[in-house]
Length: 309
Image (cartoon, rainbow, N blue to C red):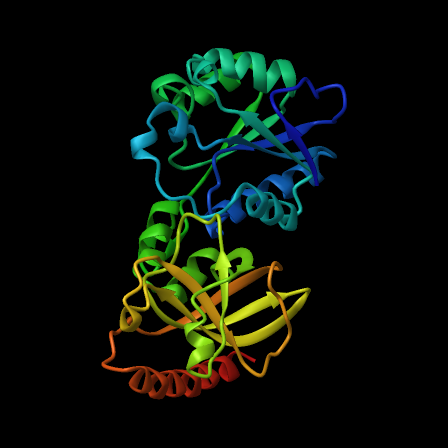
């Protein structure tokens, strides 16, 4: 997949562009269905499939206090879009000036002037332009004026709920990573470099890899059956998200104890996949009590992870 930063003129480089617009935070199954239809239609007309998205998230510019914690980093979002099979992703630099555009100017100058779009696919609730004035009805009107077709994709339902980035955030914040998998079509994961921690796990016989992550959305505090991706290999483990209350820490940590693992991975980038929440974080009366509970957690986690294979 080719990534284009900014709103460059690319219409002379591509053929019959079929495009979708949106933030696509999380790249959940609703987003992936839109991508699927864009790709399918582009193939039918011998065209180019394009995702048009924004960096940073528009709310960071127009209303920073209302910006939700993001589900994916820019790097991860690009990876997930590429894995879907999209040909080109255009990442517009979202500035205050960009935000002030009238929807008609965006349609005429960007969609037609820069890209030469033939067809546009959007989700059922998409809006664009200054003050979110660009409704789907307005987009269709612009399509009639400028000569592009608009297709609206219906909502995707899971557990009788409309799949959305907001629902996904709430689900992850509650620690329901099993439901998050159904919303994403994959396991929720976070990436980060292995950093020095308090060495608490090592002191009680269960060394952990603590990760320093730029991810904004961390699952609910607790203990999880988990997997770690390290240098292209997957390893089973048990992860902890929390403050280590038994030792009265005041910093949120994300750490994973990897089963039967002795490699030195300090400074390495790893990815932790959350499989199932086992329990909430608990304050124990002693390190010995915590050690006994971790032994139980590992036994339960191994059962969960073995059922995944």
